[in-house]
Image (cartoon, rainbow, N blue to C red; front, side, top):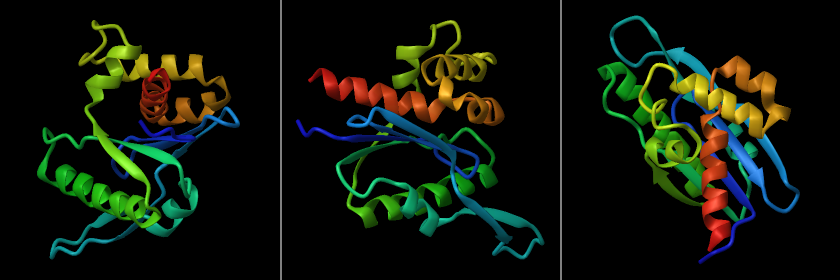
Length: 166
């Protein structure tokens, strides 16, 4: 099995976050997905958010990384699904441009490792994710508090631990 230096967790979407764990320097980063707003391409006058592809490329590791993408969910409105798929496509283009390995992950996969079964799927789940992420990564407390959860950090950590066991 391939060994990776970086584990990147991406909580998909324009309101998501990205976390990078460097297993050589034992450092981590946590930041909002870079986005911009522009006029929608539809006839209805509205704005849409899109991924800043160029900025994303500069923030991701350039090699020896496994990127974990949370599988987009299909239980939202049509506009939310459209936005999610646009974000996923932009993110995939950046990852493939850099030649990084990636895989998809259902949220329950990593949630079961960090959250109690009573929290998974409940209204308290985001709060639980936030508390666990702050406990594990207190250096990102302010950013996690501001965002409301630490899902991307927990995804990256789950896969780091999974790959280090093998």
